[in-house]
Image 1 (tube, rainbow, N blue to C red):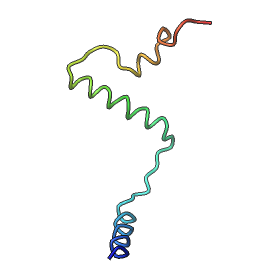
Image 2: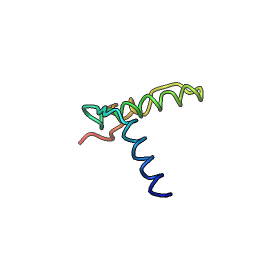
Image 3: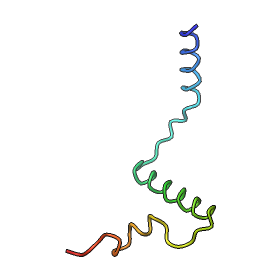
Image 4: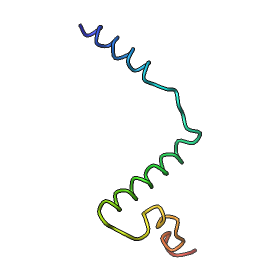
Amino acid sequence: MIIIVDRLMAVLASRSWTGFVVNNSHVAGQEFNRKAGEGAQAALGWSGPSQSQMARSPTASGPER
């Protein structure tokens, strides 16, 4: 029984994978997190700069050396 289920799962997984890969997964992940954060802020009724905007701000990095 376990072998049948394993085979079924393998077949379903191989049929459902499109093979789509992004060029730069790190950047794509950051973009996804930025959009998700903005959506969460909007759902909560918050306004102001997002965390990603704060991270890019020169004043958010701390004192200059």
